[in-house]
Image 1 (spheres, rainbow, N blue to C red):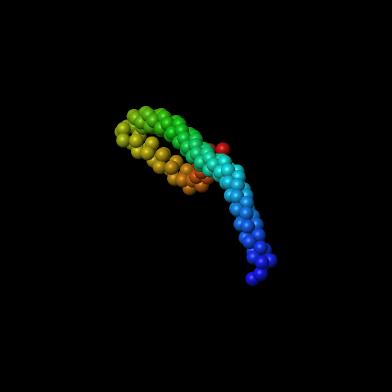
Image 2: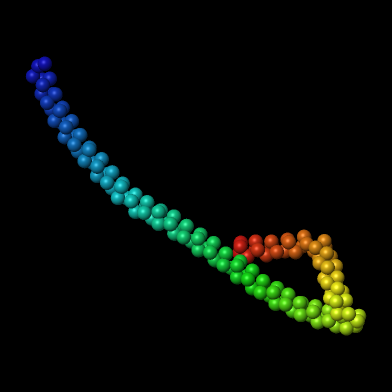
Length: 143
């Protein structure tokens, strides 16, 4: 090892050492800038995800309450109609019973009428009623 080699090695070590330190400092600064740049993005994306989930929950609650309130109001209307039909049927049964001479004949006639009507509705309109009901529920959920 001559003098020229030792100077070159010494100079190289000094230059390499200082270049290494300055490159490391630049890398740290750029990494910190990148980290500070990405942190708000990650926070916003996380916030967006949480907000989206909350929005879907609220939409599901709204649809559920809409379907439930529609079903409850329709059930109340059906119950009122059912009570009306019950009273009409009892009145018709008593009236027919007076005409036929025995009260239970009137109830048998009204019961037979509803039996025949029920069978006709089941065999003729069952599919139509089922499709219409399911369409109404699906329409309420999707709108």
